[in-house]
Amino acid sequence: MLLREFVATLEDGHGGVSFEGDALPTHYVLLTVAACPEGFVLSAVGDDMTVAAEARAPRCGDLLIAIDGRPTEEVLRELESVTTGSTPGQQRAKALVDLRIAAAEEVEVELEDMDGERFRVRLRTRAWPLMPERDNWGLSWPRADVALMRIDSFAVKDWAAWLRAAPEDREPFLRGTYERIAEIFVELDQNDARALIIDLRGNGGGTDALGKRLAQHLIGEAFIFLRLSALRDGAWSKPFGYSFEPEGTGPFEGRLVALTDERSFSTTDNFLRCMRDLHPRFTVIGRPTGAGTGAPGTIATLEHSGARIRACTMRVYGPAGGLIEGRGTTPDIPVTWTRADVLAGRDPDLDAALQALDE
Image 1 (cartoon, helix red, strand yellow):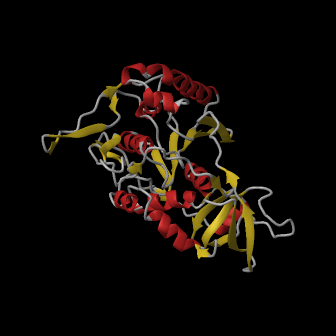
Image 2: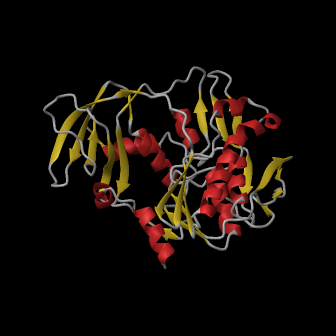
Image 3: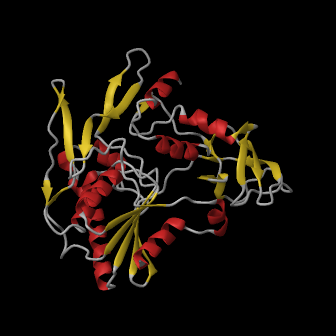
């Protein structure tokens, strides 16, 4: 625990501590919690969780007051003390996700409903699931001429195999996603989209190869995606970046909007900085990003415990020269979610994007 607390103080969202034989958590509660001005609000609730059939079930919009008799804020602070993050906002966002983790098959929660009435209920936990393979890239149309591209991750589908492969053997892992990106831009062209909203909320990164490929469809001339600096002989090298040519039949000509939050991170931060530096019609809406990047790797293995300490090993700069780590992307239009938004099923980030496109 002390070692995890120490690494959490490094302010490196890629940091971490791992031990031989580390296992995934065994149980979780099927609740999603959002931080709003009114408190910690249930934004998604699973079915058939209550232990007693006659018990009052949690509902979206309820405030989470306590977990197993401990105030939610107290539990959250404890989680934050061992959670790595490049910013305090990212630490809190990651800790909010970890509120779902449970050690037992049942937990007791105290909730407050919309009428201000508090009640306790025991909830069943569920076995930690295996993550299903899914398409990280989706396209929908909130308006006939406005497209919404949702990117859950910049990872390739078989991420474990990607990590095992040598850098020179990784190109085949990228082809399917390259084709998917090209298909999306063909659809945008065929439907005469005047604007594209790129939803990067919760996107924790992946490989810069995919962030760079997306930028190649959006920037109409040769560009540098990012610049890297390494520590050599006690000094940081001059930042250096490779130049890339545009992809496809031509860059997307419409307005561009990105939706972000504190869990937008790593490759996502690199992509956002590239676009902000180079694209003249790029607007960011939501909350500040997680602000972390820098070629993470194992920097030490402790002799007695075998603990492996992970941290970033390089400095990453945007095309215009600004450092990304710890700074990230601040939205042009900040948005704060409220309890009323959650209760009504609204998406105020998307609403703000559509409003900005109308102005």
